[in-house]
Length: 346
Ligand SMILES: NC(=O)c1ccc[n+]([C@@H]2O[C@H](COP(=O)([O-])OP(=O)(O)OC[C@H]3O[C@@H](n4cnc5c(N)ncnc54)[C@H](OP(=O)(O)O)[C@@H]3O)[C@@H](O)[C@H]2O)c1
Image 1 (cartoon, rainbow, N blue to C red):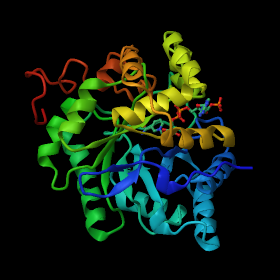
Image 2 (spheres, rainbow, N blue to C red; image 1 turned 135 degrees about the horizontal axis):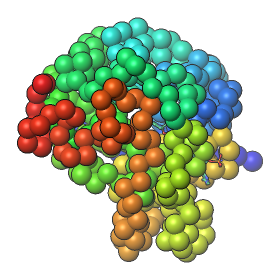
Image 3 (spheres, rainbow, N blue to C red; image 1 turned 180 degrees about the vertical axis):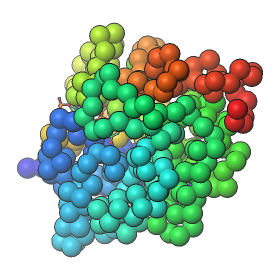
């Protein structure tokens, strides 16, 4: 028998707009390993077991299959459209045609509108689905404030048209936000970013919270099934850390559950993925009971290892040294020599 978690018992997070969403969502990226039908079957199971928040994206290649699941759930009366919080994203190769991309996602997902629409990456550089770690696109360019704003303005227009309810950004850095936030008419409500115990992004996290932007944490379990192109010999396995195992043993749960409890209690919205019912049901249930103690929270806080898993090397442009250049680690936009965190295009 499937475990059912009453959605009303799942704690909510309030956005700056006053709108509320569940404190955990279901990821839907098949990591180049799981077929669209496996992912959509998991989404169907997740709705039945009480999930109401779903993280989708055009580039995951499964929105039409997931849309059929949503449509069936609406038709059967399992949920109403307004019960779900559906997020989707514009992929990098559609930055000049955001409305077209959004309409396609909304149509595929059979959802009339997106509750939250992200710019998946802050530049138009793209790679083919399933590419390997050495793939480079010669058309790739460094981040440009101007290009990003052209894309962002299209999102603002979609919001005014009612096709989307909120705008989000993803894979951002503090310098990129510093350079673009003052130029936006409608600020983003959320930022989707990599967040797990060994990669906590404290500076960006605090910046977002200070600016009323909700952090949404992707790869909250350290993505043990991530694509080959995102696996490197020095990567740390979050769920194998002795401290994670110890806390898990104290609660009688898998370390994955500890990572999710930590995420929620810290204030980000984790969006774990699994095709296994026992796992995704357990991940939701974990949000409703048996929180980590303050001491356990402090122990997880010490596990920061700056272990970025999605390095983004496949998006590099000619002239870039390595993947570190994508993330403005010296506090400046790439190619800018002025003092850290300044705004403007060169
Ligand atoms: N905005 C972006 O650029 C971006 C980038 C990456 C991901 N995302 C989003 O974030 C979501 C989550 O990331 P992810 O799927 O890469 O990684 P993840 O959620 O950190 O890890 C998923 C894996 O963890 C395992 N797992 C899940 N629940 C478990 C449990 N209770 N106990 C034990 N193992 C468990 C499963 O592996 P097994 O199958 O081996 O059990 C599953 O495949 C994606 O689906 C996507 O929606 C967004």
